[in-house]
View 1 (tube, protein in one colour):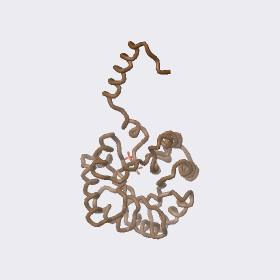
View 2 (cartoon, rainbow, N blue to C red):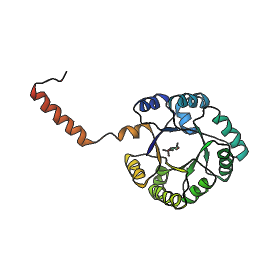
View 3 (cartoon, protein in one colour):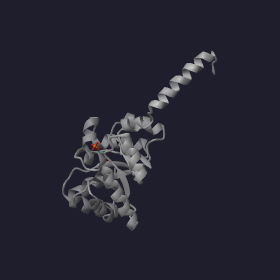
View 4 (cartoon, rainbow, N blue to C red):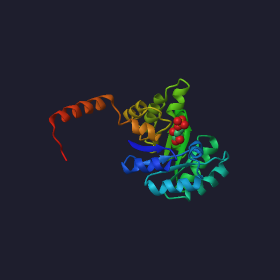
Length: 217
Ligand code: E4P
């Protein structure tokens, strides 16, 4: 499973990247706002750090304007994935921009039918939002499973990018189902390493080690 980091925080990306944990990055207008940075400037900086796809989202609502914004964002670096919303205009823009050879990440996907349309329009990635479905008492994982089944039934090559990941269990479940990629905030990725039995075990080992009176260095 590929790990994308869902942030526009350059320092957090750099830190995780040094550990080899970053296969790509996803941003959105809210994350750009949170960073307090200019979209072009911060995205360029991220693209210089990360080799894999870096999603940058358009904000226009009409296909022609989305295409123009997408082309501008794609000029930032060769590893830009243009992020388009799953609307009819977004699908039109997806068809055009993917046809021009750009990577496209179709975002705000909440149904299997939407995912089917994105694949047919040539999306490189489809982003089903797990956490936001869970927020309204629907099952985000069921959606990931449905998309996996449908894409496999027909051999679609669009990668399933499990998004809106809020918990470590979301990561495990998405991996179990076979999502190609997951994108999560740096805090959730850091939590993947945590286990109370690891902490307890380490504490006990260190207590016993102290009793030996030995030193390694
Ligand atoms: C995905 O590309 C989105 O940026 C992100 O995962 C949305 O997550 P949220 O629902 O926690 O805002």
